[in-house]
Image 1 (spheres, rainbow, N blue to C red):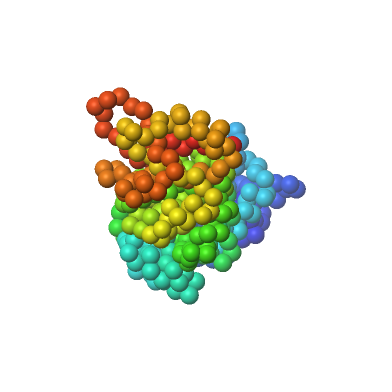
Image 2 (cartoon, rainbow, N blue to C red):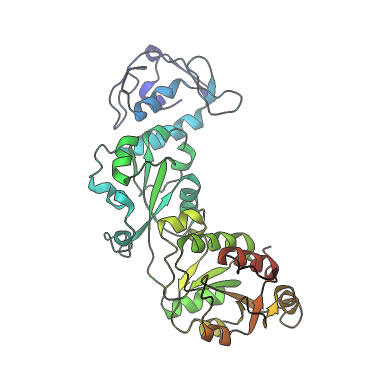
Length: 367
């Protein structure tokens, strides 16, 4: 299975069969010839996670699960060579001060937002966990590198096989990873992505014209709310929707925002707007709907009926303000419709992420 070219041979207990690779592991030097992997014998105390991964070359699929066993067992040869491919790319890092992984060091957002090198002149961002890294690889952002715990190399093989060839895959022990990040990290994998240049007025105009719907965020400084709204927009807004952010909103590419969004902050297009954002939305053909708890505003159900009758065919921009102050008075005045979510008297207004999700579900057809 794993690294068949390096370890196969009768003297190593491997018998190659057509269409599959059958392995009977013995206590030979199974790490011989593997780049970055020291020679090691099966069962040696103190072996690294990388060596453990190589040791599992004697593994086999059982009951269609990817659990491996040392005797018998046949696996598709393509799976073995997939693991071999990413294993040969893995670059072992033993020092948390290694400059090659500097963007992961203590995860300082201020440093990440600045230009790092020629490849990322506008800075980078960090993705945490399998699902978020998967969204990065499917997004329009460039992947700079991947960092994976050596104990996770094998289980993450399918994901690692999709990492672009120009993005290095770094691996390290959990101890070194803890030193690097400044915390115990249990998700096993991180990735660094390259930020894009901020959109100018022309870029914003093109994005708005191409978007089927827009969620406009004004003054949101809570990363959890921003990340959650991106996730809601991805699930509840029509395909091709975008998010527009007013000056002063927190960065949707902050590490926690990306994590809370489950990676959807990388998949939903967004733009940082200027001071005349509502005018820009109007010129792009959007009907602007401001969500507010004000009693003199239209209730959500009536607003939805308006969109299906009088305003049928118009693109919608839903305007959401920060918890507490809400939307600015000028924004409320400029909006074509002011809309509220009916709720019981005496109850504080809903969290902006919750309120936004309710409004999106009522106003948009996600299909």
